[in-house]
Image 1 (cartoon, one colour):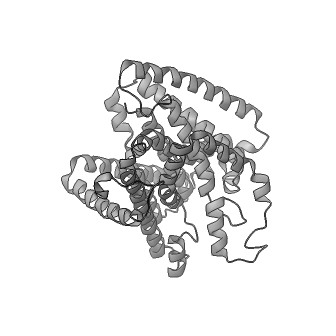
Image 2 (spheres, rainbow, N blue to C red; image 1 turned 90 degrees about the vertical axis):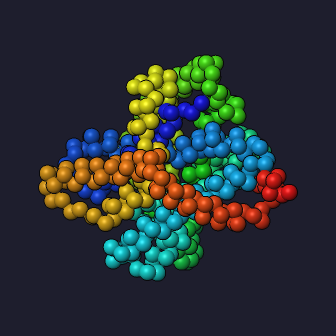
Image 3 (cartoon, rainbow, N blue to C red; image 1 turned 120 degrees about the vertical axis):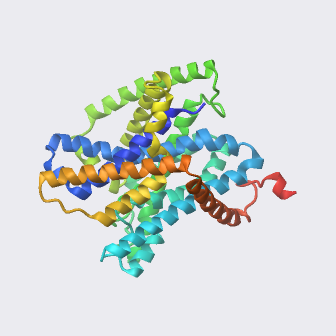
Length: 405
């Protein structure tokens, strides 16, 4: 049984992320009352932890059952590494666009950015996914070999070690290493004085592990969720409890947050400094949003499956949206001066991004030309991924037995 609410939560998170980018690009925040602006900024910042956590959920629900079969592991790894290559190519295209339109992106700076030695506005998540998708086979192997508990323990220890890790000497200012090296360290670990938006790879992996736990909970500890009445009843019971617990925890968190924390969660300061409270609140809100969407779409079946299938197109076009939606913002660069102009550009850009993703989603499903073109792209990236992984053997990868013979 496919859990539609998971796709719905991912679509909402992607929509919030793109709305955040448009919000910044048009300067809409200048015209919104402070209280409402803080609430909106907080909602925008929860988007990233949500779709990172849900990536872990999809690993648990979709990929781990296939990984459990040793003969299928090589194919699963090829698929994940292929997706990583596609994310990296889209990231490189976005940097090339900045090279064409932004004087700050020289040739050498752009090449360094493509090689993860710098950062870019809005599309850093593609760089992040290029790395974590490539690491996903290792994560699946660890999950299959040792279970969830060691992964959860390491994730909690990494978050708890923030005071110690944050106090380490900065490799740029204290150790004198190059700026590019400092940026790579910040991207991988989340620590250092270089201002990068984050999340880092290590902190992102802690959210992915939380997503693995959520996926295991949703399927009731089984390899996969059945499509019978008993499975649906079990899912309903678990999600109802999860929604109640997440609502309670979120309420307690909001009531007990120290003064100024809510504002800091929305202005990216806690995210950029990799403080544990950002990831804790992000995980809590991601679980709440996912449970709420499952409750609406899979338990109440509000509106029917066909309606939900049409509404969650962002979840099916995530890479396209993050790449080409943000490239649109790079190319347009509006400079509205009045409230009317700001509203116009905000609605126009959001509408265009939605339309682009919707048209692409429909074209993939209905156009033989688009489908065949994407299939050829997939075949190329799969072939590269297969060649990259060809030299790896058990225990991380086991080749398909037919290939061995």
